[in-house]
Length: 176
Image (cartoon, rainbow, N blue to C red; front, side, top):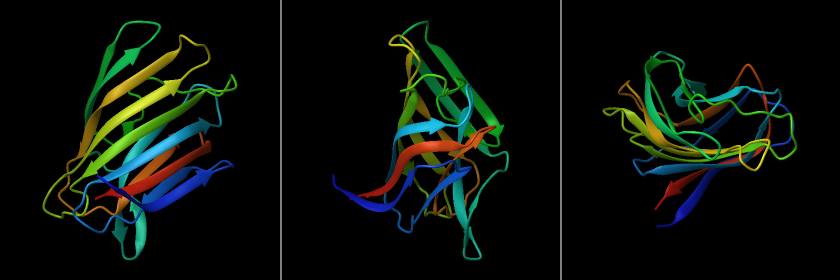
């Protein structure tokens, strides 16, 4: 397996939405994000697909996201998180991320399937990790989501829900 970089964004000041577009083949794609920080304490990041609408990459916000994740926590019991016909998939299930202690951040890896295929649903498998305010406040999620509209998608969107993204590196690769 080889990775070919398609798009990258390094965030150094507050932004509402990070869009990684450039998907134009039927290959599998992968999104890596590291060191993601937000503007407020205790808020969420949300994931959505994008598509080309008359030459403009547009985030899809309709209630067509179905998802399920298992959350593994270092300081408490495991939990499940799922939803049907939602307007987004939250990063790290039902757990918010914070900014009240230096070093708190989020990292994730997403594999993107069927994005360029207008006859199939776009599907994403998710591996997510949050580094919290203490050494025992760590969690990881594994799961996925599907966008239940058969149409071609050109990319991926990560945005804040009641916050902005203040840092991090986001990179889209094509898997060869």
